Amino acid sequence: MVTEDRTAVSEILLTDLPPTRRQTRAAIAVLLIVLVGFAAVVPFSDRPVVALNAFFPSLDAIVLVTDLITAVLLYAQFSISRSRSLLALASGYLFTAFIVIPHALTFTGAFTPTGLFGAGPQTGSWLFIFWHVGFAVALLGYAISKDAKHDGLASEAPVGREIGWCAATVVALVIGITWLTTAGEALLPPIVLDGSRLSPFVIYPIWFTILITAAGLTVLLIRRRSVLDLWLIVVAAVFIAELAFSGLLPTVRFSAGFYAGRVFSLITSSIVLIILLAETTWLYVHLARSNDVLQREQHNKLASMEAMAALIMHEVNQPLGSILTNVETMQSMLESPTPNISEIREIAADINRDDVRASEVLRRIRTLLKKVPFEVKPIELNENVRQAVAVLSGQAAARQVDVSTAIGPPLLPISGDRVQIQQALVNLIVNAMDAMSEIPASRRRLTIQTSLRGEFAEVAIADAGPGIPPDKLQGVFEPFVTTKAHGMGMGLSIARSVIEAHNGTISAHNQPRGGAVFRIRLPLRKS
Image (tube, rainbow, N blue to C red):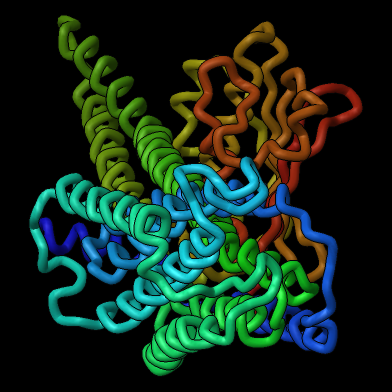
């Protein structure tokens, strides 16, 4: 279980994410810019420039900050992936961050004429060499170990302990190198002659460092898999250009090439940091968006469940309400001294009919929610309207609603699901009754009219209520939109779904004299 979790997390790390086309183009663009800059400076690389000793401690301070932050971010990635290659690379950046401290303090002419800590004229130059050799070794170590079998999840040692040992080793190494280049300066061959000219010997450590870097670059080109690999290739190329300016092309210190090499040092130390920050931010944006989408999906699922519950309640309440009314009426009749058996039989038949209708409603809702195509059968719309009115006659009488019907042509043949269309009609009629619940009983008039409109059969249901508020008229058929104080806003939505599924249309508008009228149009059945 732990392995699966870590594997899932590692899939979002820069060591595992493959570079996109956009990232590849960006890396190529940076590399081309650097190469153009390198080619432009080469002809002037040996031209002397004014010595700016204060420039180098400032540059070292920038490298210290950038490389230290990069090391921390890489250690953080290692703590997740447990990749030995990341541990090596992070330690390399930590080494460069720490070694620039004595490099800045011992630089000739920066703080003292000869540098602090008893530094000599060769101290700064040798620290520079060790600085670059150390980073080249770390880069090669990353490239070689990134695909090793022990990489990734093999190590279960505490992360803090491993990082601590690496940091302690780096600090000890920096201290040892600092001692060697200061107290043991006499043991090292001279690199700087008479304060300005470079010794011919400098080409050997520079070429040695370039070869190590080139080996790492070659391995990365062969094994390139991730975003980090892509940008480390750019780093290695810039690093080689920096080394060329540091001892191969110029023969004197403080030349144009000498300063260009220091500028390349800034580029080398900044590339991975910028990419880590940019890609981490991009991943965070994606994570935030994914989380937002997940929350919306959860909300939509909850809303769908609420809609389903409201749908079932709304549809089943009608036949259940009729059953309850009939049961109460039957109980009242049975308690009388001379119950009318004939009327009781009629009531029992009504109860049985409503029970069948409730079961049919539930079955139709299940079909609707599963999006199963309904069964198309011939229907006579006028007869369907009469049945819907008959089903609701008891409710109309209980609510004191005067229902009048104006049936049009003898036959209005359509095709579809008889129960679904009848349920849509029932919803509209009940909605019209509800709209008149607050007006005096003497004004509660409901008119249902059928007619022929070209190739369509039309049903118009008009009430005498207050009408639909103008701000809700456009969205009256949307789910959960209701004009009633205790309405659920599902009846009209269900009616629209049913009518549109039968290739028909449904509309609503207010009448000039008050009240609302709903019109259903369904295509006539072709013979």
